[in-house]
Image (cartoon, rainbow, N blue to C red; front, side, top):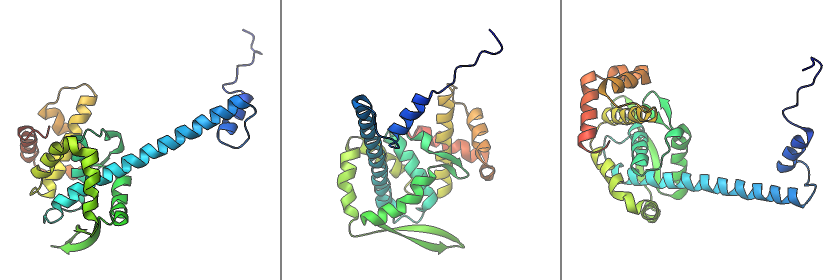
Length: 236
């Protein structure tokens, strides 16, 4: 091949024009392009609707958790976050990619920061920040419209409500630390499974303590006893 031979460009000018047309910057040149853009608009609308429906479905599940546990003295924001994670797995919602590794365990930052606004918007709960024993915690207070979430819960989760109730019941009296440990171990077990690795105590402990420096506060015996409890209670 001659050294003067030009390489074929990755994208042609027609590709660029098509991109502009699909984005709505220039009008379609023919009926085929018009149909293509209309199809894209329909797809984008459906995608947006699906995303919105998923968000509301998750908010309904969160409302069920808050409804069941809002009067428990151990129920605060961190415990709430971890139970949303565990209950979503119990509901087979498969949202693992939405959760990031935060110090206290798997956490969907965007969703949890918007949930209080959604509760207020739907008139389900208000959230008050209260101080107890030199630390602040969130207290969820039922509003007049709280019962209205239930019809959505029954519609979305009626067939698997027992699994969700099981998770909530397991952690009803549990302290935040135990909930955090369990949620993190759950996430670690999923990570091992995704890699096709067998789950062993050694591998779980390695992933658990590598999660964040915060995990060093938990004794190995407590972590392993929590794992055994998770297996005994069919959380895993």
